[in-house]
Length: 239
Image (spheres, helix red, strand yellow):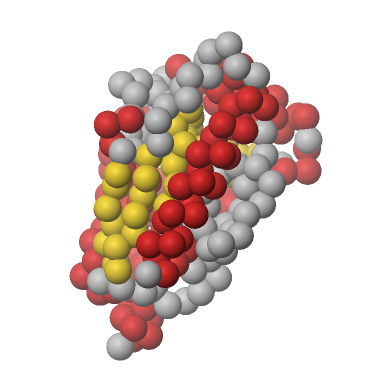
């Protein structure tokens, strides 16, 4: 039954991309706020399908920590789930991502309309400068910036070295950092096909004030909180 439900979900998800992405391109003439509101309806539909078809819901803890204005989100990255769900959980946002994603026909073209910060990971210092310049522009426009500091999806119980890009952006601009931990990978594996029923826990941590801190200090504080919280989340997933 889980296999059938997962197959059906994936068929509907990619079919909806083929339909919704071309329609989204028509929003290019609209202001970002309107464009975002229209395009994010696709994400909302995916979340509904996950609940109805796969029995996979989510619970958010720590919403009281969200600052009133724009912020930099530093989040654990375990699954494709959070790239969809964050559009439901957080205010209008964009993401730091690899530029190759924008080359995907239809999907990438629609993604480009949401003003992502698309970097060449091999560019080194130039990529960091791009994150600062474009990230500052997005934040000043009231758009939150989502960064997955590990750079790629990691399996539950594992971790990668945290990159400095998101912390550098926060240190350079003075915007606050919101650390986020979740256990989505236990239900929607990073390279798995099956979507397992259950409730994903998303935990939003206390805001990190970036003012007066170095990028390395911000990175260390965010990493320590996220990884400590992940230990508790993974324990609850396996119990």
